[in-house]
Image (tube, rainbow, N blue to C red; front, side, top):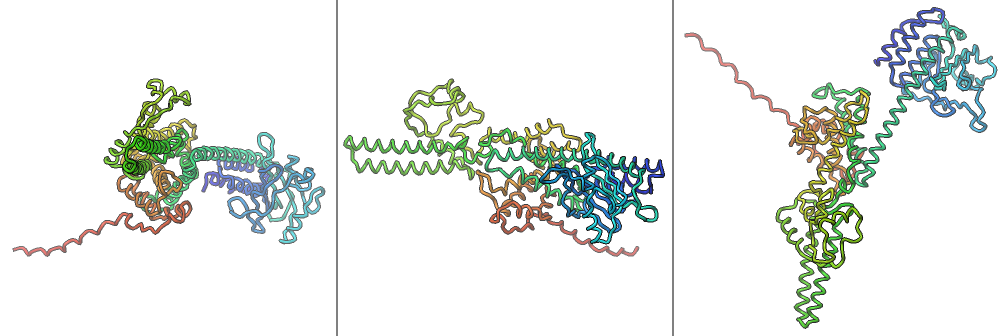
Length: 597
């Protein structure tokens, strides 16, 4: 039971009408307290209508909200004698279109409809009998009565006005009843009481609409930031959207457990929203990380892949070899011998180029032998005739001021030039080509890792309200490891909350299965689970969450929604689950005692 409903119970326990004085005022106070405590719009509107019907003994009622320009939408409907309950918390959708306050073509005000008239005039309308009332169109009401055998008679329509005197809705009550159940008009005293209730209701609804609008604005800003991060890269466009889905899926599976370690794990409405915000903002620090670092697909890639320059140098070496052959033949040397030497040189250059190109991919571990071979190849020289100080931006030209190269001269096939090491990242060609694992050098890896530090710093600077205070902790822990060897804080398992640990698994599994990364092929479901299992064994991810991930079927639900069909292969999770401890060996039967001698 919500706090608002509980607060309203004392009010509902008293039967009050307008003639009883103080008890009615007390009930209005109780209702006001209940309205101010309710934060769910469906329950709030339901509480308003039900209390208004109880105060007036009305058989039916409708609450309209002014949610769009010039229209009143049906929010909740009740008719006690016909057992009609729609809208609110019922889950039954109201099939009627909104009531238009203005004619769609002429834009003339619609004073024929009683609820629209109350909203337009901002005045209460009290009708003793709809069938004899003049000035209003009750044809729809009469048609409803004919179809149901009902008799709509007394109507009370109260506009709901906020602080700015703007209409937020209309409260309409039908068929007030006396203590014997006879339909009577709504008395002046009752009308005044409902107007007081409507005033409280309007403020409560307006506050709720403002809260909803602020929440919607915050959600949209969060998603805009996440989309901006994803949009920086054509390859990670869905990461910030998929990680929240998997994180919340894990949390749902944990909440559904009735026994075991997750039996007590539950999140209330505000805590779910807190997790939602944290998951969407978990990579906000990447807004500062250059996309050519995040998406570095090869070892020589910066803003472009410098392997094209290296290939051109091989082209130069081949032409130099051809020119040398032609010069030698022109000087009278054996054409057969020189052509054979040229052919051999071409074969060597082709093998060298293929080796260099293969190492640029960074797909497999680069052994020390390969590193030595690459360093030897890099010492080959070609002659540069054109001044490489020309045509540069002033920033790049400034890097050459300390060690200006000659206008022309011999150049190594691959080199670590002074201007390479003075940039923000080490751009040295030999240094980057000798990266043993992956494509990132130490500077770039530090920059990638810094995104989580910046995420925490940026989130800590945001003035989150009390119910969102743990957003930085949840979002900032997805690169921590259970053994304390993660970053940035080196937290251990017991120092992390469940949501932070959930986000860590979600971030890893999304990265393993992502099919849009330039530096790796998409892994299958079975490959990804096997890697995640190894990470669990190495103390990187939480073992209990890993087991929940498998046993609950969360991995398959995620796969069916986000993985390509060719990635979803056959998976046997049995080897990855914790094996039950073997039963203790049976104890030896007790030996009979020997009789005393």
